[in-house]
Image 1 (cartoon, rainbow, N blue to C red):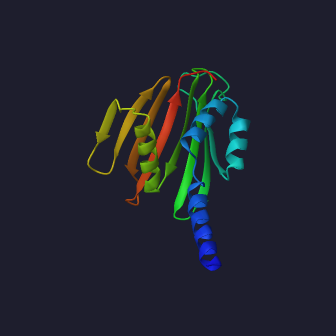
Image 2: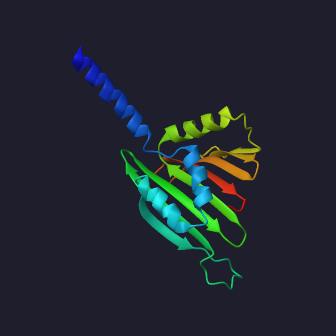
Image 3: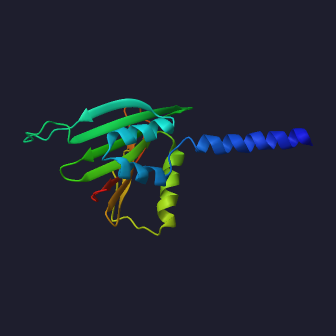
Length: 169
């Protein structure tokens, strides 16, 4: 009996811990709040098991500034059968912040669909090009939320979720 209980406990612990390797909706919104301070974003992601992947300072064509007012930061977590990316972007000048994730795990699509359905949020736009690219856009207060599937070069699907905020934190 004790062996069966131990097996069940380890099995349930394994299920819970594998799902907890992914960010939740509230974690993504937390990244929006932190986006103004890149060091805090990086600390939050490192504490959640992510590794640095890429940093770009983005310049617009007619931008004469020093080039550090608009950044895009990518972190990755190497999971079993998934390269899980988090991207945070910040444009200090226009006060536009975005955070999101990219995953090859179809459960992430389901997670966000169900999360948005629980809020009774209806998409204001949707698309499906018939070649593996489809998605939905939602507007909630100062947030623009996009959920999309894209077919990548090897033919597999990448599931993407991101939030853009026009609120200054």
